[in-house]
Picture 1: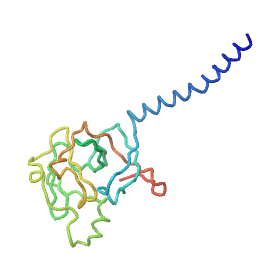
Picture 2 (picture 1 turned 30 degrees about the vertical axis):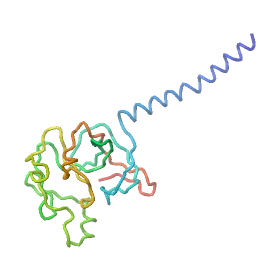
Picture 3 (picture 1 turned 45 degrees about the horizontal axis):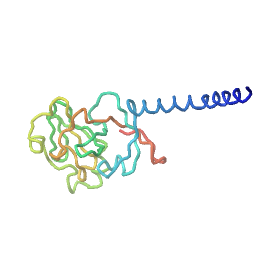
Picture 4 (picture 1 turned 60 degrees about the horizontal axis):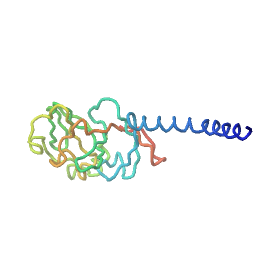
Length: 188
């Protein structure tokens, strides 16, 4: 009899440990599946905003806005980190290193440090329009035009192989860098 009580007492103690671990694991899986997930930046296409190896928190909920930094799946199975420039219904063009959306000039303050390094010798973003690059006049519903902040070294929507990004391919937006620890910040 005493042995049975001892075994059932140990099982009860074990269950007291297992229950919170299982609950925590379920919560983690649900949070990562539906709310947020970490991602590592691979490459230099978002410099100077993001560096190769930076770790970000990606929010999987919410709407997308112009100039959000997003993470999306590509047709070749990789994930890219880029900035939304064009929204559905927009016309996008660059002229003389300036962004025009629907004919209106937009400032891009996140590019100021990169542009100042060139000191006006060369344009940071070469002239283009979506007619020239993608053979369309406006971005269709459900699609976004994305560009890396490192305009001279980014494979993005300007390349017809990447093209517009479908909304369902976007994993989410990121506005938090949590590593390296000495560079934790809210992104603009």
